[in-house]
Length: 286
Image (cartoon, rainbow, N blue to C red):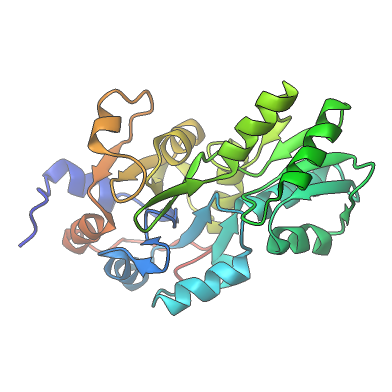
């Protein structure tokens, strides 16, 4: 029996949703472990023909790698169903700085993503410094990036997340590295592309083709998933399976529209809802 109370208001609000943007780390899985209810939730969306896109701020891997991981964990996924902050940053740069020379603090996967998009990756005289979630970061490259930035080279970050949830706790994310750069150089990034920036939500909703007002963002972070969803006009759904705790929620400035212990309870609510009357074109879940 479900311990989560499914009220008529919760059922009504969930049944009105026509599309979903889904965070991954801390929402659907932790590390290489699928979180309880993730498979049931995705099954509910697919059975009902509700489109969805996996939307992650984690820029350490590309869409292909995430799709492989999701499939390995037993979830349906194609590359077109995954939008990372790295891909959104590449898109933003192509529209404003095509063929720019980039010094990238990022994993080999992120660097390859920028190179494939037509950017020249350099170690000297860059036009821009780009910071991602760099699990391969060395002190030498961090120091070099700070030198470029002090000399006036503008810099951008793929996303602001301070920590990345992993089994047993957290590890420093791009936001923690950005804080070190800011402390050393005194310069803020020109822009941070990932959640909560409206840009990445607009890219995701455009892929789905669903109305903004009936599209939900499901995630575990208040300052990225929830703040960004609210600013973009989406329905903000918080799950308490990752970074945010019930204590964090008490004094939060960014209030979610709905809160669930995990996606398991969200799946349970969906199972009680009538089938949607219409289906919308666009991204995942097809």
